[in-house]
Image 1 (cartoon, rainbow, N blue to C red):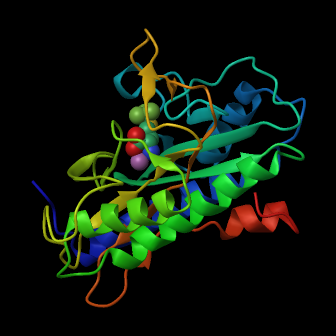
Image 2 (cartoon, rainbow, N blue to C red; image 1 turned 90 degrees about the vertical axis):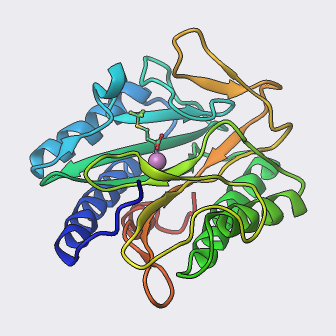
Length: 260
Ligand code: MF3
Ligand code: CO
């Protein structure tokens, strides 16, 4: 069932979304060669708790982190660990914050030091594809219009779209209906209506679209072990263009001159 949110509920998602955005802004300050992904996770957890939120991923169906950590070929749902980030890595940090009973969800993929220009292009394209998807998310259009916008853009650039994972509705639960695929045909799927809150989260591979699940049932990586990128915003469908409830502004402030 797809919920249409009241003004109060929307405001609550907006606040949770702002807190998760600020959290990723804190994490951004610590991305560098030599730091472990567990240290990043601790930064995020302490910041969320200090600000009255709840790290919603932690313990979610047993998930062991505040952040999902996505290093290089890890697609989604990687565990924080003792892995030490090194120059040339990319690392996605995906986070959900619950605040006053509502959730906000966002993800950003960072470059650790200098990275291969080919991988940099993947980051640029994946981030841009998120905004293509958002632009398609207008009342009266359908979920398939979003996926089609993401897929068309990424495939035009020679990248591939992960099929097994998708975005989702969000509100009292971090995962609500509808599923928001990053591929598909225009004009199909659930109708978009004002008051719907959804998360768009393209997961885009440099090589083939195929992924492998680890035995733990969570962690996923590309089959060809080439890098994968992931960006996510929580948005509100309105009568006009969508309102982006999360923001990368805090991350951008932390990154300064850099983009990733
Ligand atoms: N943005 C991720 C998702 O929607 C957040 C997952 S949190 C986890 O799948 F707890 F499920 F890992
Ligand atoms: Co999500």
